[in-house]
Length: 245
Length: 296
Image 1 (cartoon, rainbow over the protein chains, first blue to last red):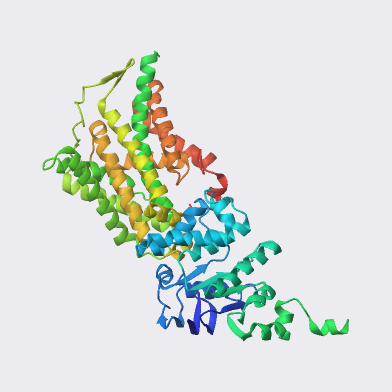
Image 2 (image 1 turned 120 degrees about the vertical axis):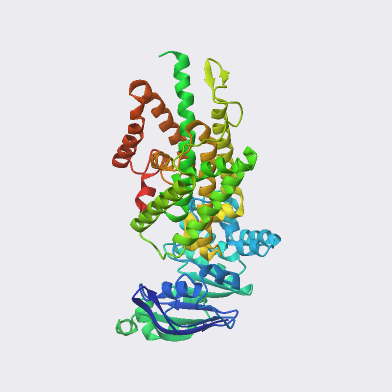
């Protein structure tokens, strides 16, 4: 579904991504893990069109999108849930969701907006309760749900999420991750970027490890979970010291 | 000071205050969409008034006003497309210089087209001497037109921003540009639209006020200063507060004539502008935290 080849990207003269090559197949949950500053957000921003790559290819459904601006990428069926939620804070929950469905307004499919709204409310009943509340007054977890809901309103085939667990209580993180699993069961494809490597690998099919702009490891989620380097660097376990205990 | 005179001052204050508010709303719409102050906003007001006066030779008054709004709107859109759209993340200073440059350009063009003559639209109803007696106060019917049309305009703008998908898109862009783009909203088009909307609003303001204040090629600048003061006084970006702040400034100015020579009227607004910038840059109704986050 998504194929990236030798992608290089960054901000101005600062190069962040170096020759990143990866792919996501339809129906998969793929996760990208890595520490702060590894380039995870830059990667998603570049795919979504917010940033222009300096070199390399991004193909979505075999169509080159490396030069496509963000507002057009959404129309192709690829949505990003940005880092830090980025809800429209001074607008109501419902307005946020309706704006998420702008794609369907443009296609003159207003009935899809309504069904989309029902679907999102089904997924996150709390958003229905808070429908008329300003998005900025929601709790962090609710804002994250709103951000996911807003992206879903565009009915994407690939949904990319940038650190959905950031700053949330563990119980809420569990909720969010179970929703991601449910999204996949309903036929969506998910590209998940996480610092919370354990949780992300726990639900993913495959994963990539990004370090200083390079992909240094890739494999199935189980392989990565049992990989010593991954355990030491991202799961907070040191097998060597554990065995001596 | 007797009671009737007091109300006479109030009415005069409300009239001018309304116009200031209309100009300030023009500032706010562009500020919300782009984070910049369009210093050519006063020129939109002048352009609207001037164009309507010219078109009046060929069209009846309402059609001339409407056509002037549309022409000014197109000029606003054209200016954005030619001078602003292609800039990549321009600095605030650059934008200030560009919009000031544009205001000079429009002013000088207007001087070439219309000359230095002072022009005015006729009173919408009645003449300059007709008045309506309300209690003990004499009100020119044009005052009612100014206040009425402005009130309708503010109400329509509110409906536009709250209930239409385009209005919501514009708000979304002003709250969070990147997130709006991720929803498929073309942020650049929204900026063009905000210039067009501001220009049309400015033009309407120029038309309704021109019977009272007259219009000349350079009458935009003083109005822009007043409008800017009001926008700052209310808190940049907040159009409801701009109406309140406009009335405050209009009434203050109007009463200043009572204690000071009329020539000092502008001193009031400039003093208020300086005072508010020193003491409370976020404006009377703006939140301080929100102001801290803003670049300008």
